[in-house]
Structures are given as C-alpha cells and as structure tokens.
Amino acid sequence: MAKPYSKQQQLYNRRQTLTAKQRGAINNEVYNAAMERSGGRCERCGSKEGLQCAHLIRRWQIDGKTTVKDVAMLCGPSVNTGTCHNWIDYTKDGKQWAVDFRDQLYEK
Image (cartoon, rainbow, N blue to C red; front, side, top):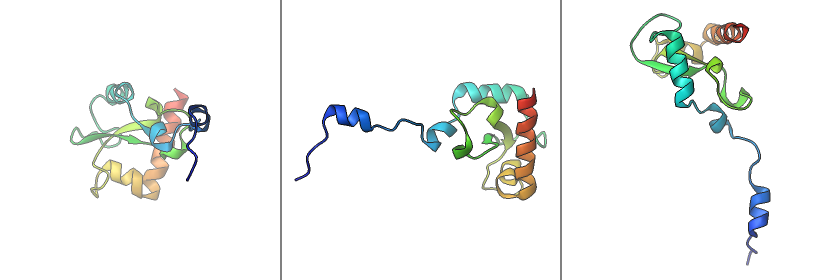
C-alpha cells in the first residue's frame, strides 16, 4: 500500500509557477482596459459586432500574467472564418499583424 504524503510534503511539492491557463486568464480589469482602449470597436476592422478579447501571443509565451498589452479587442468568434479573431489565430498575415500590434502597444 502506498504511503500518503505528509502535509509538509504536499506543500513542498505544490506547483511553484503558474500554468499556461493561469497565465493566459483575462481578468475583468484587463478586459475593461482593452475595451476602453478600443472604444468598443474591433481594433483591426472597426466593427462593433461580436467583440472578443483575443490574445496577441500564445498563453505559454506570456511571462507572469496577461496584461492589457497582451490582448486586443477583435470581432469574433475565432472559429468563424472571416472574423478578425479567426484571421489572427489561423493565418500567417494575421499572426504577423498580432506581433506588430503588440509591439506598438509596448512602445507606448
């Protein structure tokens, strides 16, 4: 029979770093700041329909937690062809746009 871990061992063995899901979580503060920055419009095409807060880089590439400079308000959803969220997630040009847009945000 396996010997159970003591409470001290459980605390010691607990994950020390955030998971990709935790790093990529978009909290209300980040969402509201991104919405204010965009003026309630898609930051690529200007549409007001179906806005989503989209990551500009993959979650596993984020250091620490998601900030307003890591996301953009884009029309979506990402699974629908023809939306800006889909474009940045699934096309080479879209991925480059996301990198360039994020670079612009970090320059400010």
